[in-house]
Length: 308
Picture 1 (tube, helix red, strand yellow):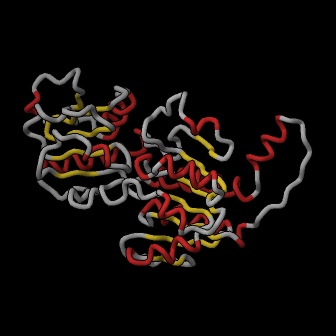
Picture 2: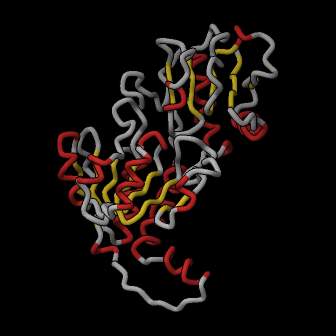
Picture 3: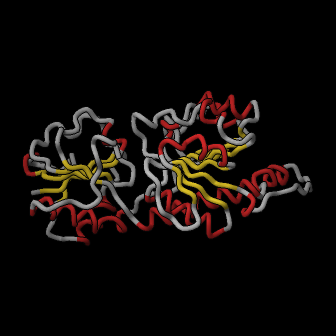
């Protein structure tokens, strides 16, 4: 038996070292080092090139190296009726908590505006909002969404969450699938943390923006595929939205000629809100590998039907 690593960037060394430290008995291979594809029983991947799984006929499970799994479903060679897993890690959650909180505070305290004024050597105090007077709506109130909501609530923001089913989280109002319009009507800052599926692709569009309070602020830390880019530009131009912070894009890296670069009302970061660390998640990957070997139920499984 062997555990196969496939990454789009081929940055394997940290993952091999971490997995060997977690369980030295595991044989870890890559597409470049595998000698017998039939020995591979589990693969762990991040944005593997399409067709990567076709020759591994004895695969029992495929795991994502991160919390996101949409890249798995993009590959037509993904074997049918195979177990799929994702990473669930406290460090991923805390990284996302800190990042989204920073963006929300940056917005209500006008820090980006002051950075622009500094470049012009201008002293210009402006009015600001307090956290207790601002409602942050989290679109996608799952594990990460609830973690982010808890920190924002602790800071003092009023927080609401929307998901397929209601969640019971202290001091946070939770809305379910048929209550989207009510949720949107309150969200002065909208944070997208949805999984990317056929149902959520393009959800950040003109229709959704029109249901937000005038001048709402958008934060997308989920996937670029959620956003209709031309609709965002229109919403910014007509001031339905006051600005946006985008960490994810349809094409990454974001092309140098993309129109987002020249917008003062868009903050761009290079998909760094929350990144998987090999040392942090290797233990749960090793655990799942051994569960595959022993025919046991896997941790952190993903539904092929739901896409998350």
